[in-house]
Image (cartoon, rainbow, N blue to C red; front, side, top):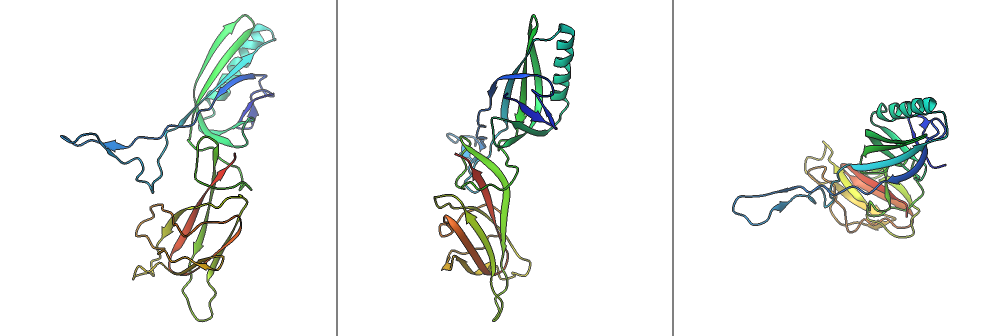
Length: 252
């Protein structure tokens, strides 16, 4: 039976609510722009975050039906159900039609009663990304709200200073996808890097990456030469600072 789970309770097993329909559309891109007097149009800042837009919250709507019990018991069940929904606060909302879950909060419950049947519509505001409970074995690529999910995972390669006998710092990433991907990156400076050198040596699977790995701020970016290939990727680095690979999980 289709249902949702919040704070350890399930809409069907704990309340007997039949989930009849759901609406979980993708979020809207947040338009960030400014206008200047006497200038035509506006100035768009929507894609200034490393070329990636930000998103507004999702609106999730679930419709439930309660039926087939004495009216007094029906009213109490509906009241308990609505109290469960509205008192949950911001919580993890699990929909058994999804492999992943939402970070959501209830904003309303409305009901319509017909005899011994009551329909309750629960509306939630949710963070734009769906969330994975663990690190998945799915592929990674550019994020799409139509069929993708957020995996709250990043990986960090911290370079070491090059000396005669010191091995480079290494980070191994196994890519289960059957296509190459370009990860989103954040560079974190080292206090010892007074000359703003960054990585002095950087390789993926033994192939040199010549593009400079240094950024004065922690603004996200990507590198044309850093493409993760299906299978094992071994990154190695000498120098200063840390490179964070921000990974998004995709489920087609």
